[in-house]
Length: 467
Image 1 (cartoon, rainbow, N blue to C red):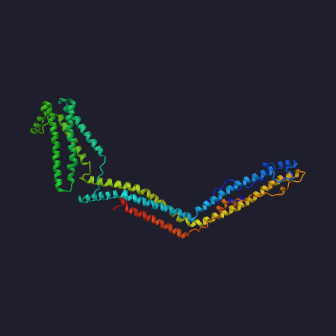
Image 2 (cartoon, rainbow, N blue to C red):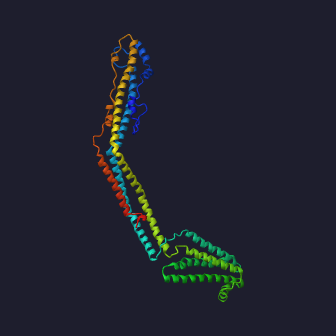
Image 3 (cartoon, helix red, strand yellow):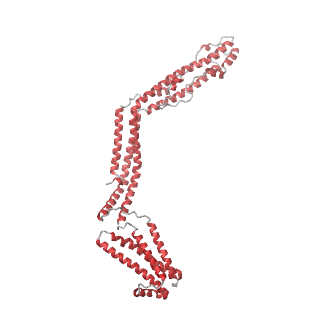
């Protein structure tokens, strides 16, 4: 009997069987546990039960309770096993699997619809902005005959910081020089120096940012004006530093209130005369700082005027559109792939469902037959235990044993005929759909999902996929 049930432990998803399921009843062990020989002999000596007793005595009832407890436990285990078989049959039901895959396809299509609505409301305006900015950028490149990409200038904050550092450094050096001649000492000297240094650095930066960059512009008139502005700007920087040099020399010769007039006069009369070596050093240092500022101004943006601004405008809306597109479609792509994968797996496995169901039913029939044999063995074991007790009772008594000693015990019912077992054993009478029709329907679902997803992407393409 145990061998019949061992076949259920196959490699094809067998239901879990509780250890000890359908274990045979060891009548010798039970007889020893309940002391049937001792109790039978002792009660026989006492002429118990009485000859006219019609009700089974306490020892007999204890035997039956022991056997029924074991039988009830096995019956509960049978119901659990039959339920596991029923669950497996549902798992291999073509109609159930088809309903599950239909639900997956329907849920994915609903997600498509939801994203489509979101895309129209949120992605549409971003798409229009991106297309407009992209076309503007393309027209700009075409009009100005630019083939190279725009330069992505970064670290602009560092450029501003460097300009401030240059102003501070030049101001400090000039301030130390002016301090000796200023009525306000170091503070007055630095105040004067800050003004000169700020004009120097900022003006040089603007020369590089505007005048020199416009020399690259694809227009002869603009180029001419840019060259002219560059020359004027360069001359202005030289004039500024020449004035600062003569002003420093004037402070060393006259009082501060007459130094400005003295510096202007010497600048026009002897512009190339420098009376002190520190003034010459500071003149060269100022020119060096101006050149550095010009370079920073030139490299602050793309060398071609307006090219960087047009590119950044197109790039900013592209990033916004791409981010929103990623937010909407990356998760949708995962759901689409998961749905298609599950449906394809169903197409692969559904054709073997009938065979698996047939195997499960064969196993279930074997289980039922084995349990039926087990219930017969339960009755046999119970009656063997009763017989042990009754035979010893008869042997020790002198009176006639009660009439029920000749009765055999039977199970009150069979677990196989209970409502739960019957419900779990009887298969559904609804016919399963035809396999070819199911496979065709599932393939159509995959085609529909892929088509809807492609159509959705066609209406809302990623920036890299847009013409």
